[in-house]
Image 1 (spheres, helix red, strand yellow):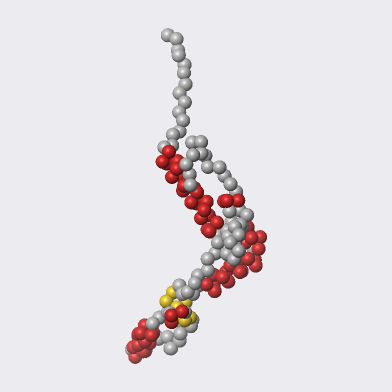
Image 2 (image 1 turned 180 degrees about the horizontal axis):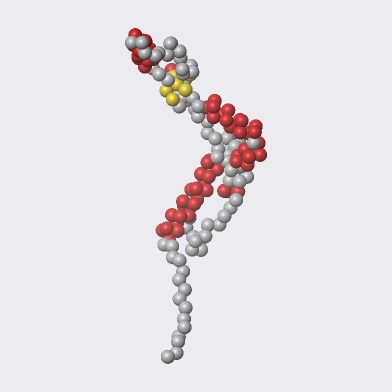
Length: 149
């Protein structure tokens, strides 16, 4: 018997709807990527302060503990002074601590900070960094490149 020897080639197939969805997902990721490393300051309180009733409850518990010879705070305040925000809301903000860490990072590692910032957006000017995806174009190509965003 003579052998017919042939070969079979298979091509990967991606349905058009899946190709379009993948390209749209990549496009959306490309759009939001610069925001990933852009610091957005925290406005307002992140943690609420104790209300006057909660403070009174704590004092009462402390006094009751003292009456039974149990350890008390001795009137010592363990929380810092709460800040008052617009509308009289009282609470605590992490913003000073976060901004302090960012400033320390920039002071101790200026080149690394500059590199990281090149992936983001300048919050004052809106200028995108040199390494954001729009400045590093990559052709989306699955089945000839159709579809997409």
